[in-house]
Image (cartoon, rainbow, N blue to C red; front, side, top):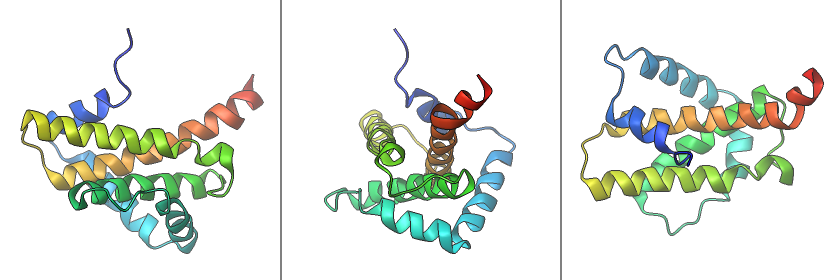
Length: 141
């Protein structure tokens, strides 16, 4: 049986790298995403998919995941308006919610800032993988 998709995300939060290099890279990517109008436009569109009843603590992590997806969409020329592209959003949000609940339930200590950056990276990864699955893999094979 395969591990749950969010297992890597959870493990990266519970066992972050000690050098902090990944967090620094993520900070720079977040700054870049927040400074690009096309990314912010995609983010606004994708943010409509987040239910307003989510806990405020959780909503911040969901927003960072969506910002990561938005940057990935812009960089890979994907559209936040096409159903075949936004189909990754519900599973992405489900994974972030699952990790959040598991952390709360286990009462594990974690760095909230690190979680935000990991959620961002997770969203970015999902957008790049979508591009691979839909387009690039077909071009190469």
